[in-house]
Length: 285
Ligand code: SF4
Image (cartoon, rainbow, N blue to C red):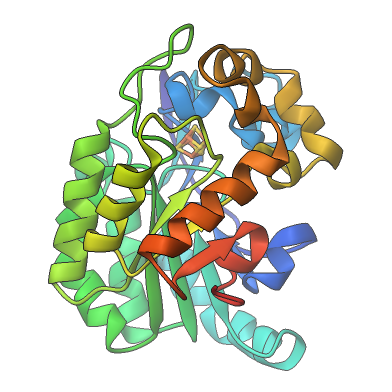
């Protein structure tokens, strides 16, 4: 993977499309993602964004936005004003197009710098979205932020299956991500498991029972309706649906999501979010 250091001109992106109902801004500390060649990268919708990839294969590059914290601090007041006036609040999604805690974050400390900058300049709301157990390395700053802003950490755990035949391995083991969720909750940080995109689940009852024990809630989203295209057409062009079908043919149908939501509600009543509503922290059932 080609890693380069770049100076970002801006870091707070005003949201459009489906993210607009979730938050006022997205913030990407990196461009590209080192998990792009892992399992989550197979169906990752960012790979279809030509502005991000500029023709490069997904998972082959990582641009480290070394001045992210500085640019955040510089633009904070202006973007806060705009968001409060136009969107009813300054809520940041970190991150919608990259992994905020890639392995090299321990060296580059870009996300760490942004989180520190948010201590002095807190948004009204912050959603931290990750596939990585490394989020727990930031538990102290997250605890401080949870006293300053409406914070929730979303940890993606799309299935209980360690291996999906025909697809690459998970970037981070499922057990390690569950441990991270448990630790965050124990430390008082609000944490939601995002089952997104929903993959076939081997033992759904055990899976949702485990989530109910360690997380504050669960959000379930299917690639149909959830990948930003009509009827999941982006994901249908990838290897994901065929691999899902081989395990459970019903899992590629939207009704599978509804069945899993119904089951999840048995273990997490009032703590199940669906599709974009779940990401936006509304309509829990
Ligand atoms: S971690 Fe997120 S951005 Fe990176 S490949 Fe996986 S789904 Fe895409």
